[in-house]
Image 1 (cartoon, rainbow, N blue to C red):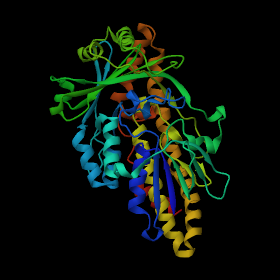
Image 2 (image 1 turned 90 degrees about the vertical axis):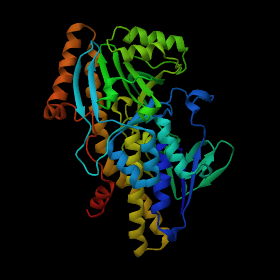
Image 3 (image 1 turned 45 degrees about the vertical axis):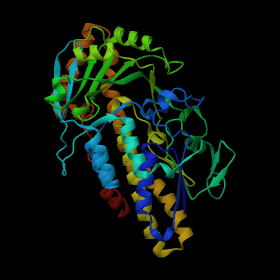
Image 4 (image 1 turned 90 degrees about the horizontal axis):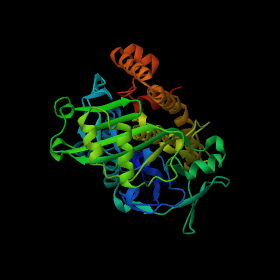
Length: 446
């Protein structure tokens, strides 16, 4: 069996690890990962071609992420070594603090999800998660190569690379982000399935902070502040001994920028204009020391009628790029990878008992692609809706009246959990545990 994974991001690397561990040994599977850029800092240093310009913020290696407890448990399932590496490089958060631009704490919510074994959300730069995955896979197992086209009209899907090479495979995994080449093979370039601008831009960076705020040292909390001109969040980006703070700002806008590279002083000026009167001194320090020159529009993938066919499957952002404001992009990519890999391997095991190996692989690939969509698409859709509901009110707060109304809305949905879940779901902690084993076994028993 031959598998080609397009993209060595979070979902691509996680899928590689799962498949190499779980595919039946009798298959002698060959798994190739193609990635066009192998530098962890490509988002800020490497030249970009037309397909890379204004890529979705959730795919930017340098941004902060907060990985929820269910994802931490899945990392342990993928590899105990990966789990230990990642936990040692991030910061455990025991709470989310929700604040107003005027300096009031609206709520402080525990991040414990009540599930055993106990885990907490971990904050870190996105590249830390990527680097832990890459090191667990091994740098030598990632092949440098830019996939420019995928053809699904033959007996097996064919991958065409920029250097002129072409390869066929039993399975092509599209783990190549919101502007996915594999997605174009499945759906064409029709506007109905083109990436959608969410009406927000984002900026973020990291800051050395010898004196970390009390919200972090005392409460071990992520802090997110909402106001009439957007939102501003920060969290420890590493163990406290490293004195590193990650921060991010999102704000509503009608149109995406023409380029994601902007003069650093202009970015700082924009931050000052939006958040200069906000009361939190940590926010002001982040603005004063900002040197980033990147501004990212927030893109999402429109709802797709399926996540693959004819030997091609989409995972992570390629299938369902979520708003950066959902805080779930990397988490859902990991859930996709574990679920699909487990489903495929179990189907191959079952089919191999009744059929020859070639037929078993072909039938199992198609069934696993269908099964992934049936298992996962509703969960992802709910997360997208919740993120939109949470931030929708902030877009309307153009004067004091609407600002106060929005703060009351945040107070209601955070202080009264049942009301909050009814309106937006539990947007500040994991929506629910994703037990990939239980979900897959239940699906196979239908």
